[in-house]
Each structure stands twice: as C-alpha cells, then as structure tokens.
Length: 344
Ligand SMILES: Nc1ncnc2c1ncn2[C@@H]1O[C@H](COP(=O)(O)OP(=O)(O)O)[C@@H](O)[C@H]1O
Ligand SMILES: [Mg+2]
Image (cartoon, rainbow, N blue to C red; front, side, top):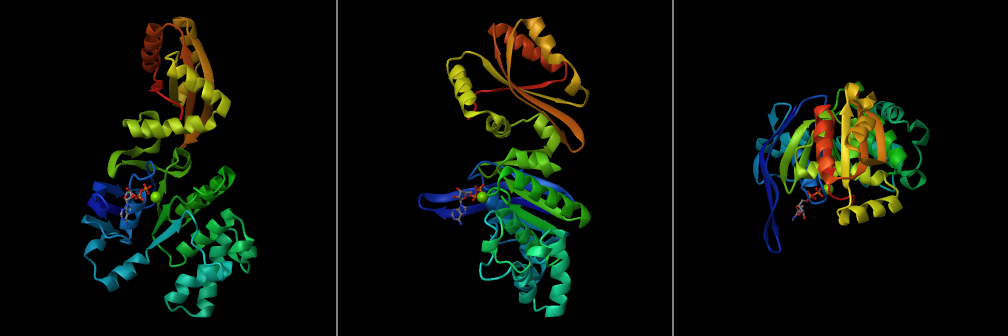
C-alpha cells in the first residue's frame, strides 16, 4: 500500500516559486497496477520521485507499506528504498557493463557475494526473457531488451513496489505492448504493486487497474480505468482520451476533419459502449431516426479489465438540432457520448 498524503512540492524558479505538486492525496492498494497520467509538465515525474523520496516533498507524507518514509532516518530510508524499484524512459544502463553486470549492480553495491548474485540474477534474466543475452553490452541489444534489463535490475533487490516513469515512451507500439505484458506478468507473479507514469492513454488502457489524472500538479480525477474511459469527468481526461482517437486517424483525414470542425460544419463525437451495448445496432438506428449522416472515422472494440469496451469516433453532419437530439437519445441507450472540439 502506498499512501500519498497532502503532498505539495515547490521549486525555486527564475520567476519565483513553481508549484509542481499541489496537495496530492492518493492511495494505491497493494498488488495493483496504478496509472498516473498527465500532459508534459503536469508533475508526474516529480510525483513519482517523491514516492521514494528521490525528491523530498515540501509538505506532506509518503507512507509505503505502513512506514512513513518522510520521517525515517537516512539509514532506515536507505533500507526502505530497497523495497521500491524504479525503471526509466531512457533505461539508465551502464554501457561498459554487460546485461548480467547491469542487473547485478545493485546487489554488488549492497555487498552481496558472487555466487549469491548469480543465484539472484540468472532467474531474473529468465523472467524477463534475456537469459541468452546475458553477456552482451547495452549497445548490442534493442530498446525493448534494454528496458527488460532495466526491469530485471529494478527487481534485483526484491522490491514490493515498482515505479515506472514513462518506461515505454521511447519504444515502438509493438515493443511497448510486449513490455507492458511483461510488467503485467511480473505484477501477477510477484504480487508487485506497480505505479505507471505515462502521458499515453493506450498504456493506461492496456495494463492499469486504476488511474489518476494529474493536471498542473493536482489530481483532477481518479478511478477504475473502465469508469474513466466510459465517463471522463475532467476536460484534461477527455483531451487525453481524444488523443487515442487522433493517433489512429491518418494525417490526411485528420486534416479534413480539423477543417470541417473549424468551419463549424459537423460535430466530432466519441461514443463509448460497454457490456451489451457493444453489439447492438444503436448507430444505424440513430442515423435513421434523426436523419443524420454519420461518418465513422475510427472504431475499436477492446477489453478493459475483462469487460468489452467499444469506442467509435464519428463526424456527425446534418441539422444541428437533430445532432443534439441524437446525442440525448444515444445517452438514453446507455452510450457515453463526448463531443470533441479538435483532433490534435
Ligand atoms: N528540480 C526542479 N527544479 C525546478 N523546477 C522543476 C524541477 N523539477 C520539475 N520542475 C518543474 O515542475 C513541473 C513539473 O515537472 P515534471 O514533474 O517533470 O512534469 P512531467 O513529468 O509531468 O512532465 C515543471 O514545470 C517543471 O519545470
Ligand atoms: Mg516526466
């Protein structure tokens, strides 16, 4: 269990104080994959760095597994930190060390003897799928493999918590999926609590149980991932969900949609369904009833935490009054409708 209690963080900036975190309160239950999402500059890295006190918060407390880190002596804090592993966007590997020796580093620093180090490191390399690459150097492996080394190294001291700061942001989509699957597997097999920092809703959708949305240093929304996808409450959350759609649209189509929206010619709607709604012919019914033209831009059926979840982006044209009526009717049918103002 991680508790972030009334945490604020101020930095001295050239024009005065920067309030990077403002009274953040979060409880992360043990064994969860908990996502923290926000735009660049929202305070995500600052928040994750306060969890292991790499940055000490200006105000508030961090409690990890019942221990208040913010009130520990430095010796006790060093020991408590061993229960918290961390992985990074740029992997932070030592180029002069082999895969094996990178994973072994924290154990060497802790004074562990070589036979014991081998006993710990080899199974970890198996777990992350790098046993065959153990004698290679970082320059001889791919980005995804580098992150696997980072994960194995973070697990070497047998932590209970793994912090991940944009760990997949430098990877292509396929490698991202593989790394997220690995993190999910580790979460289940080792019962590790994972805190995932990201700016991508895709990442949240794939692995997280719960998510908190951070904006300008404040938590603006938090809840189970499926709820946040179905009913985003805050404008920033909606914008981040809009990004998922925008990323899927081919550039030429995106430009045409942007042009139509700029002219006030059409409404860009994001429709979300869950459960039975996913396979009902609601859309064709709407088009008939309200005589609209619905241009489907993007559609996807996924599973979030075992529940079917469908999402559609449509450009609705026709009588604006009827568009409004259609939105109300869709909502009555249990479809979540968001109007997006732009596609960037
Ligand atoms: N050590 C620091 N000194 C001064 N300002 C900082 C420091 N670290 C972060 N900030 C500022 O705090 C804000 C949040 O930064 P950060 O946590 O890195 O955001 P994110 O990870 O969400 O992109 C930014 O305005 C950033 O410039
Ligand atoms: Mg960051």
